[in-house]
Length: 326
Image 1 (cartoon, rainbow, N blue to C red):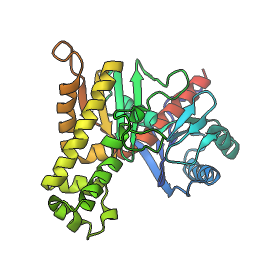
Image 2 (cartoon, rainbow, N blue to C red; image 1 turned 135 degrees about the horizontal axis):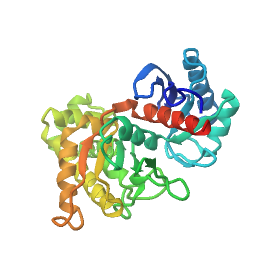
Image 3 (cartoon, rainbow, N blue to C red; image 1 turned 30 degrees about the horizontal axis):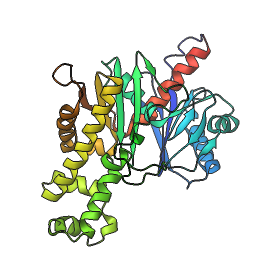
């Protein structure tokens, strides 16, 4: 193994629906330099070209830095092929092979939620935990399971898609093709939808929400509902409480199946709403099977914020590069 290979900086990228974040990250999880670009529509080729350009810019400072990419979707961990992405136009996209062709070097490609979960396990709110479930609440619900120092993806590489457990049969339509998925009830998108429905019903309690949106119902989103709830608006607090109750129910289901020691909650919605997590913990404790005869898992707010994905992707790339040199 090359001297210092486990300590050298690495490059991590987090591909989102609207932006691609990139950073040069040291072995302690500290971002030394960062860059970003708008996600260029849904074209896989344009996304891959943008990733390559970001890597080239960061490699001017660290020419031999390993590269890790976190991407939303189900992927084959052996081939780096994205089988399906609910928010990007990737269907059986050979992402790793395309990036290797563009960059001329190995690339570690991982699920974005796995990358965030790994970062929290290594450097964030889960670093003292041996059995961790990490959830990212935003457009949907991403998930990661880390146990005994490894990210667990299951036999076919699609474990951790917790947001697509069907929690309400026949419920709201989900982008994955099913109805009633958990993320349709406990995500930022779900919160925005409920706010818009409240306004469209001409509810007398929705006046603050409508005023804040300047009368434009379509401008109501999860961030606005969360902001008004934090400011004390009763209607928005009720919406957040409902989302928190759904979140806690899903956590109880995961605890029954996986029995983690800690849940780490991140993503834009998880970071923005203390009330959501309080309501989720109450609901989780109320719905946990065997409650009173088993420990409750800890529920913690994520510690690394929006940087978790790129930090985790960079750290996993560093580890892969060190393993390859052994």
